[in-house]
Length: 510
Image 1 (cartoon, rainbow, N blue to C red):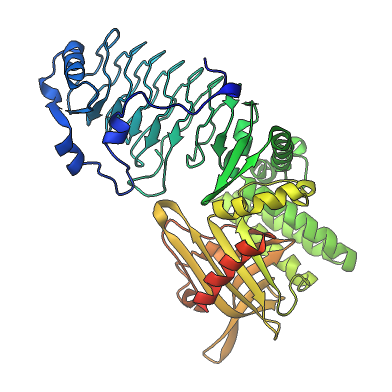
Image 2: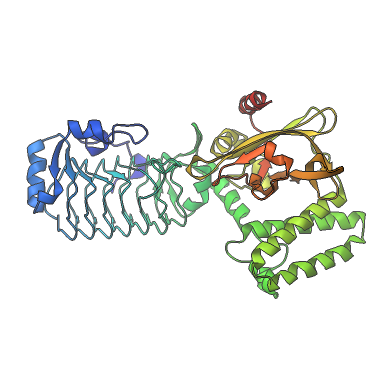
C-alpha cells in the first residue's frame, strides 16, 4: 500500500466514467452524456468476456451499458476499463482482483458484491446500492461517491483500501444527498490521504488505524477519527473555507472533543440510577434530556444560593417528573417537565446581564463541542470561521436601547427545508423564563415565548415548529419547513469579517 506520509494526489490514468458522465450538480448526467458515449443494451450482453471486448474496442473512450441483469456473475480475470453501468443489476457478482479503472455505477444494484483487491481507480458511485459490498484492499484512488438519498452504502467494508484522493460529494437534497442507509461502514487501516469526506454525513463508521494525510473532514467528524493515524496535516472544512491542522494541534483538538463528549452525563450517577425515569434519562439516545438535567441542576444550585425555600418546589417538581413513568408517552412527558422547570428557575433568577443595550451576540449551532480551555485558545479562534460555515443554524441577537431584544436567524434542515426568524420587541417574562412577545386578545394581554437564554446558550420556542399554535403572534415572525427547525445554539465570538456577514443578512431583514 502507498505510504500516506509520502503520498501524492493521484492522477487518473485516462478520463473515465466519472468525467464522461459529468457533475451531478446541474451536470450532463443524462441526455448529452448518452449522445456522446457509445451505448450498449445490457439485456443483450451474455458474458463478462463480451463486456471486456466492448471495453477493449473503445480504447480510451468511455462506453455506457444500459440496464442488464448480471447478478452473480464472475468478472475475475477480465479488464473492464471506462465502462459506465446505468440501472444495471450486478448484485452478488464477483470482482475480486479485477482491473477496471474509470468504471462507473449509476443507479445500479451492487448489493453484496465482492471487490476484494479490485483496481478501480477513478471509480464513480452515483445513487447506487453498495450495501454489504466487501471492498477490502480495493484501489478506489481518485474516485467519487455522489448521488441521492436512494443510494445505499450500509455495511460497506473498505479495510486496507487505497482511497487516495477519493471524494464524497454529497448535498442535502433528494437528487444530490448522501445515501440514507450508511451505517456500519468500516475502513480499518485504509489510506485516506487527500480524501475529502467532509460532505459525507456518516455515523458509527469505524476508522481504526486508517491513515490521514491532507484529509479533509468536517468539524462534526473529528471524533470519528479518534482511532486513526495522523501521518500529516488534516484540513477541517466548513462552508467554503478550510483550515490546516497540524498533528500536534490535531491531538489537542481530539483530546478536547473527546472530553466534551464524555461530559454527556446527567447531574446524577447513572450507575446508581434507580427509578425508571432516571434510567430513561441515562439511555443511549437521550443526550438532549441529559443536558436538560444538567441545566436544571445548575440553575437550582444558583437559585438555592439566593432563596433556600426553592428546595420545596424542587422536590415537588421531581415528584411530578417521576410521575411521567405512568404516562403512555413517558419520554415526551419528561421532556416537557424539564422544559417547564428550566423556565421556572430562569424566571426565578431573573434576567441575566448577558447583553447590554446596543450590544449584539451571534449564536450558532455547535458542530464541534470542545472544552472551555480550548475554546479560549488561539486555535479555536482560527477555527471559528470553519465552525460558522458548517453550522446549519444561526441567530444574531441585539439589545435595543429600550432594553428589548431583536433577533434575526435561519436554519436549514433535510432536503433544504428552511427556517427563518426575524422579530423585535422581545422582553423577559419572569413567569416563564422566556423572552416573549406581548399581545392583547379579548382584552387580555398575553406573553408568547420566543427565545430563552442561559449560560451562553439560546433556544427558539419549539424549535420554530409552531403547528398547533395558530393563535400565537410568533407565526408572523418565524416559519419553518416540515423538515427544518432551530436547534439550541451557543454564543460564539467570530472574526469581524464573519460577523459582518451576519450583520449584513440581518440588515436585509430589518
